[in-house]
Every structure is written in C-alpha cells, then in structure tokens.
Length: 241
Image (cartoon, rainbow, N blue to C red):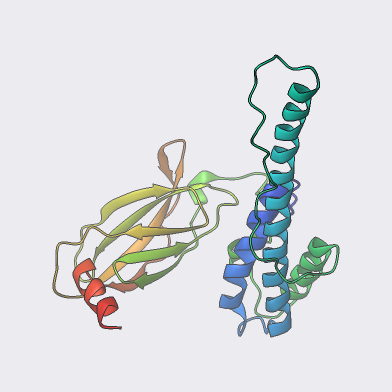
C-alpha cells in the first residue's frame, strides 16, 4: 500500500515521535537486535529535544514580557508599577548534550531496523515509522495493540497513523459480553478499569476498535489478556514498602 511521508514537519510532532520511540523501541530490542547504545542515544535525544523545546517556548514568552516592560518603561502610560522585574524561568536540570542532526540519526536507525529480517509493517506502525495510507479503507482497518496491567490500570499502545481515535473494550476472562470503556486519541494511554471486586485480582481480556468521526470502523484488534488488582490492594502493597 502507498503511504505518505512518515517524518513530521512540525517540531511539536517531532517531539512526539522522539518520545514515542524512547518509550517503545525497547519493546523490540531483542526482536530487531537494537543496540543498547542506540536506545541510549534515542533517550538522550528525547531529553535534549524536550529541554530545547521548553527553552524556546520560555524564551518566546520571556521576550514578549520584556518587550512589553520595555515599551511601558520607554513611553508607556504614567503610574504603571514596574517594581517587579521578571527573571528567565528555571528550566530544571540540564540534560546530557547530543550531536546535531538528531533526526538524521532517527532516519538512519529506521532504515537499519526496516531491513532486519524480523521487521514487518505492524512493527513499522507501532514505531510510527510509516506515513498515512494514501488510499485508506476504513472497512479493512484493524488496530494494533499492546496492553499491560499495572495495579488497577491498563496501559495501552497502538498506532494513530491512519486512525487517531480508538475505543477500548474489556471483559472478564471467560465471559462473552464486552464492555465499552473509553475513547482515546493517543498512541499510548492509561485506562482505569471500573471493576467491582475489592479483594482480589481480576483477569481481563481487552481489545481496541477504530473510531472515525464518532463511528466504529473496520475490525477489532487482537485480544490481549491482562491482570489488574483493586485500588485497595494496590494501596496496601505500597504502604508495606
């Protein structure tokens, strides 16, 4: 199938791509033989890019404030209180610096991983290595899914390349009735399951369905089994640590 450009142009979208790779690439370390040094580089690039984006936004805001201050100081209306001088905001700890052209590194790493014998389109979708399908058919869409249980939450990962919104469905393992949870629009999200049991862990089955213009489309994802525990038990475990 033909797909468009995979690399975002907007800096904010590139930041999202880096953050996604930082969290997701490690899931494929063994399957695609990803070097630990490459994972570390992606993490450092992510931290540095976030810091640089934050600094740029802070600088723009700081510049606007100071221009206003300067204009008022210069020939502004009388009686304005100028006793408060604003300092540049604290950006927090400085991250480890990285070489220039970090997205050149991302492109090169993508090429290497896509040539691996274990690579397939599903992995490419999961890693956001593919652009939107040019002739997208909603009736054939099937979401990819990764889901893990953590206390009383389920953490999902999917692809939002072709479809941004997904509906979460869950049921107790061994039962037949699916319950609609929530609709999400991110590639990774956390869902708190409204379970009734307060004293025992539950084994759940979960799946995703695509949602386009408030209508479900295509096929359901694969079904994944997860284990969650009630809030009461989770709090008790934390208090004992």
